[in-house]
Amino acid sequence: MPHAYAVIMAGGSGTRFWPLSRPARPKQLLALGPSEASLLRATVDRVSALIDAERTLVVTSSLLADAVAAELPDVPRENILAEPVGRNTAPCVGWAASHVRRRDPDGVLVVLPSDHYIADAAAFHRALARGLYAASEGDLVAVGVRPTRPETGYGYIEVGEELADDVHDARRFVEKPNRQRAERFLASGHFLWNSGIFVFRASVILDAIATHLPGLGASLDAFDAAAARGGEREAVEQGYAELPAISIDHGVMEKAANVAVVPASFGWSDLGSWTTAWELAAQDGEGNVAPDGAVLVDARRSYVKAPPGKTVALVGVDDLVVVDTADALLVVHREHAQDVRRVVEALRSRDASQKPS
Image (tube, rainbow, N blue to C red; front, side, top):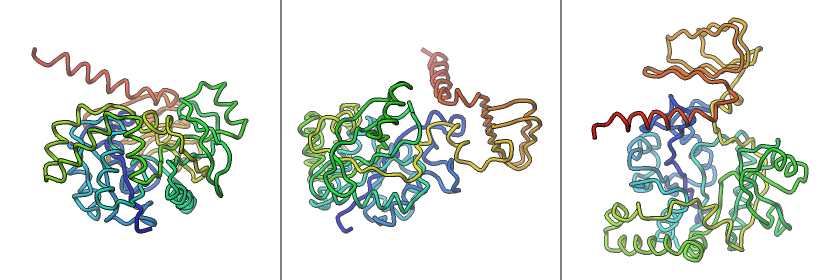
């Protein structure tokens, strides 16, 4: 697929995986799935069956650019785009699309989060191949995952008429629903989870950005003009913070008319919390996930992560997450694993209050 380019979004902070995930080494640089590879490395390896490293771009933060380069030595350093500040996914995708269009006017982007888990690589590749076909016809394509439960933590896409083999009109995007609405979505069979994976021609998504996010479009044009003069880095450093902080979903995909969706099932998880890490890991007979040397007495359905050589013991407890690092310890009930980010928020507030005025 000579005109296909992978764009890996790798700028997130992964606050739900504190204390292992930290600003200098966030979730995407950790091995949180069943594989020993980092989530970022696994994402690049997975897409490499269709798109080689020379045509893989990674958009990350300036803070993480060196760590990303070390993690991906086969990806050319010029393909690692360092944002001076995070502005959500619309600027990220737009900037990457500008780079691809300069390099290849016929380029097609496969946009992928860097921190998701996919079990069935072959099914994933088939879905991307269908997406690439639809995108080559001019559609903005979302990859939708067939739901397996009434999940309230994901956005949904309503499936419309079939446009081609396993390619449908995307009737509408729906925000994260409550439980009752999620159950209706599941029962109807007409809704898919929004995986955050998109496929579109660089020129088509840039035209859509110009239409629906004209301010961002104008800034991207300015970056292009600066690049032609050899001054893109300076222009990005000066102007990126002024870009609108909006997702590509809300800013473009929900508004555009030419949006299609590819339904797929490939064992997808967004690895949104320590609970999903527990769900994906190999469990013992009591449902526990723990390192060798852990002592578990009358403990069930718990997740333990600790440094090598550190003994952690659980006695008479169920459904806990225990994560021990050199400088921090987390103990949380699995039902509240999504709330770990509140710890990060509290620590930031505490640190800010302790700074001298």
